[in-house]
Image (cartoon, rainbow, N blue to C red; front, side, top):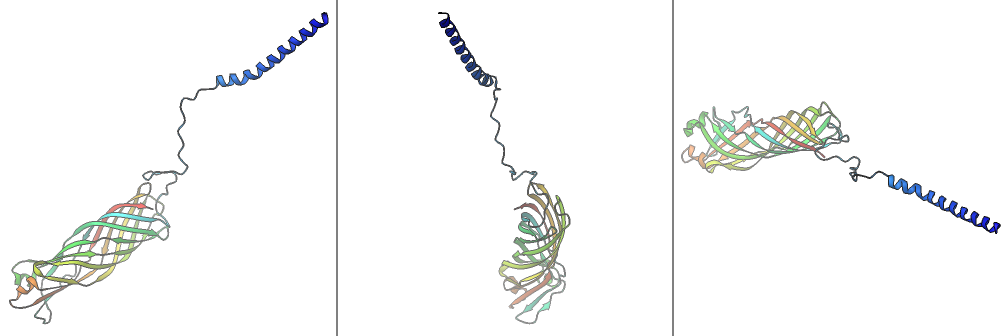
Length: 277
């Protein structure tokens, strides 16, 4: 009987020991779970590395302009013809020799239009750009012999659209800087189109061209956006002819032709916004 009680006591003690070990094993993780801090909010997803908005200047944004950059620029441009060397108006009556109209000069109006420019940086300092725009100008003849024939100081000749594509090579003094001034030299080709003579006058003109020089600067505003200001001086002559209409009335019963050769030499002033591709 004593042996049976001893065996029962040992068995109960063993079961108690096993139960206590099991409770000890489950108590630790449950306590850790219960005591874990509660997350107040789900954290925001992080932006992909290298992301930068189109109107942001970020750590990855390149400062200034340098080799390989391509710029697209939209500007407002003012074309201001200088009408230099302007004493080349002459007239022919009934197909005869042209006679110089002393003191008569031509005058071309100023004009403003939008301008598109594409520029590529060949090196850090050297770029090449091409401008494209077209402006409409009124042309008149003033003073001298013609004024004596018409009885008016100013005679309206007509209007013409001018297309002056200009290719320029520019030297930039401060590559990889926000403010980058430059000087350039280039060439201008000039076409006159959509010519409309006043009072029935028929107008025609020749193709012309000449050199140009310019100065300007780029300033990086934000991100890849730049402000540009530029002044070009072009050296271009104009060759134009007019016949018929009001010109024939200058000499009764005659056919009158007029031709003009002058240096337009327009000054082109522009300012606008550019974007680096």
